[in-house]
Length: 558
Image (cartoon, rainbow, N blue to C red; front, side, top):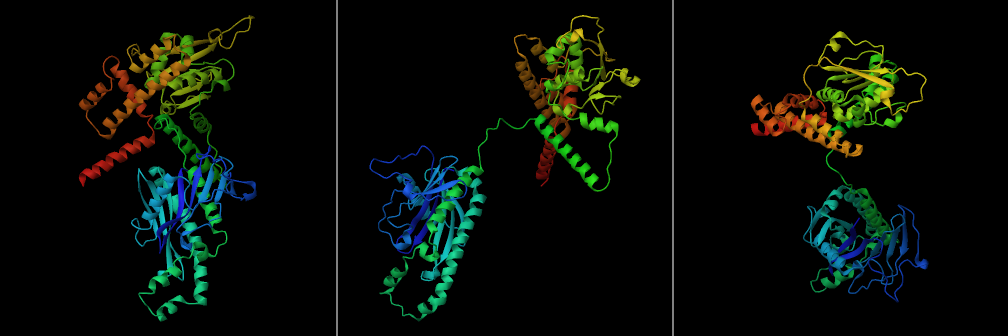
């Protein structure tokens, strides 16, 4: 964390003074040692300390101190200071009475003066935030320490955290407040014990009330009591070493607590739908486990088992499938032919049920894997291979074994398409490669749909242009398809907001369709595609829109 922690004190003789500060130096060190000066971390001054990967070592650079009383001084003039080295990152945490760099000295000095004079919170004890771009931003926590010889029996201190990053410092407010209060409470408790012992020996309140007051001798009386150090108030022999360890850990922990991450943008609808499905599956699993623990062990039916298992969106890893398989949309187009592929893709984009019937489950699964890339995740409901027919409301991708009959109402429906996969009978010929699917299978495509598919939708025309362009690799075609899906999902969001949430009429909706580029040739197919893709919007997005609209209505009504 690029910050500095300092302990400040309001001296009755010299005003606000910096007692102790800890700063972080990132490797390489910004101030190399000068010739003739001692190197920080001499072996005879090392003192290893445990905890948080830090190693405490004495620092050989002495700080010049002048015009200081005992209350303004933290370390003796001969004390070298402290250094803590983070063994993981190589960052050094240096503690002195004052910062090493002159620029930091002025910044800390100003923060000290402001924290103990003009910038105070109600009650004079507690946290406060102030600062600017030029002098840095400060998180300050002021507090009192009991002193039997001080005016009002207490002395005023503050701990300040100075940083140039305002947002980072504000976001760290709860963390800093929690841990600084622990440090402050420890100091106050220790000083309170010393205060109580001194009061038991010689109660100062009675002494002051019985002593004669003289304006001439008052300054001399006050000067004798104004120079008590924090070490004297707490009777802690290793006070500064303890504070150095605490401040060093605070800088290290606060720096590793918040990290910057590169975000490529808001999550897509596919990502949100996948998260929602995963959450639903986890809830179902926990519900089943709870039911088993309660003594009941409900077994789902065969249909429910197939449904719950195959509705999961496949990640499309073709290497897990054995035998012949479709590798890409372009490969599927080459096998089926341009006309049959366009008809198949049209049914997929319109949301009709696509049924593949054959004896090779791996081949059918590979076909579904490449066809799923045409749709948003929320529009995919697949049963990869089933021993019986599943209704269209349950799945729009259905794989069947060869002996499963198709119901009459499905065969005659224009909202379904059947692809029969027949094995090609071959004699004793040379083995055929798995890539040569046409030599292994024959594909018969049938549908009761009489609507021409050569006009639209517009998305299908663009997909075919990309697939037919031999200069584009499979990876480039996949990225192009991803961009096209995002473009049309944005159109779906606009239409959903306009028609479903706002409840506009047909004329206004037609104008919006014209703005979205969904009118003209293939307009009917474009509208069907947009309405089907609305079912793929995430629940989170829909609820967000409804909440925003209701909130706006309440605001207008008020």
